[in-house]
Amino acid sequence: MNKSNLWSLRLGFSSKQASEIEKLGIAPFLQKSMSASFTNDMPSFLNDDPKTLAELRELRLSIKNTSSDEQKKILKKQIRNAIELKKWWLDKMQQETFPLREKMVCFWHNHFVSTSQKVKVNYWIYQQNYLLRENAFGNFKQLTKVMIQTNAMVRYLDNVDNKKDKINENLSRELLELFTLGIGNYTEDDIKNAGLGLGEMDATYRKLQEDNTDKTYFGKTGNWKADDLVDIIFEQKHIPYLITRKILKWFIYDHPSEDLVTYYGDYFRKMNFEIAPLLTKIATEEYPKDTAGSKIKDPLVYLFQMIDELNIEDINTTLITFFLKQQGMDLFNQPNVKGWDGGNSWLTSQIYLQRNNVADLLCNGRNISRKTFDKTPEEGEQPNVVLEKIKVRIDFDKNGNNKKIISELSNRTLFKVDDSIQKDMENVLKYDFDAKEENANYAVLRLFNYIAKTPEYQLI
Image (cartoon, rainbow, N blue to C red):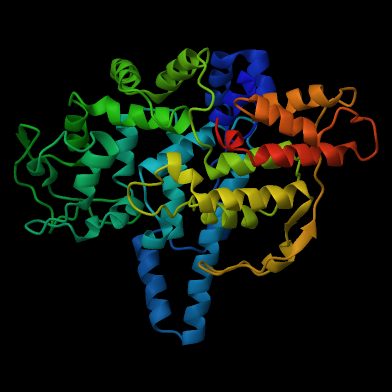
């Protein structure tokens, strides 16, 4: 696979940025991606959703005091808006000229997990997404402080139940185990501390339930609050390695070596936990290496690459959300606080079968009918499947012969081609193939369909 295509997939969701990487080089491309302008406007469908505790209480009261039909209507609207929020984010991923920020937002979204199913306040989920976008390339310590003080996080990790003399340890435990240090790098005593509660717009301490006594945290004693606790955590020697390992796994390696984790982690500490220089160092130093095939594509990359290769201009975003859910990558609804596992979990036999079915449908110019989505399916509903024609085409050299076109597609899509795959591709696109024939596109689509079903296509 061409390096530019490989790194376009890794730093985005498709091959769209390959020409920019080729033209600029990896370091300038990264700089341009991280400095690219972006919007963070609240989507209009959230205008009437509750945003503060007062508005949430008011909505609950109105639900309680209205008819059952009206209650169902209100609850259905909240469920619809949760689905619309997924579609809104998927549109952003597809529309950004430089999608690295959205790729990083997705990484943080899977690190600081809060699910809409449990939080049940769409605005708080959007607010967290907004903050991740604002801080995507910023300081990890600062982002940690921001995230643990969002209403979404406090509600998701049950810190609303946390009070003096009756401690719920969920947030404190996950702050250490999953967000910063990793298991084994703290004691059970370090977990026990007073917690935050829901505030009007952000989490806050509640005066009557707040513990203002001195607490010992990693050997330091004082009346520590949330920011103080994070500051103390970031003084610990193991702090850079959990997040560095996860970044390497998200972008390049399903199984990064501990030497690499330590090497980049030590640099991260030296850079005072700034994400932008860490990403730049990782990408520029790993780019020259032969690393293709070291990571299984997640469902977003799989589908967005296919949409890009097939030049599909208008695909119903609801269908993408349904596909992602089938594949185990339901946005805003990870299976647990650990987030999506990634790696081999993206290529179970069931997922592989689903991917092959999607490849067949799209390469044959078929889609799941949008007509079934005039009424968006509610959470948990299965949409009816109706086939509908869509326009698909593959870009290829109209002056090339079969081997040249095979090589062209291979360089864009396959991390390696052995003799067996080469022979199979030449059986699909035979030696007498004429690229200028009227139906040449259909033959190349059959070739791409074969490629998309190979195990090698599932890797980057």
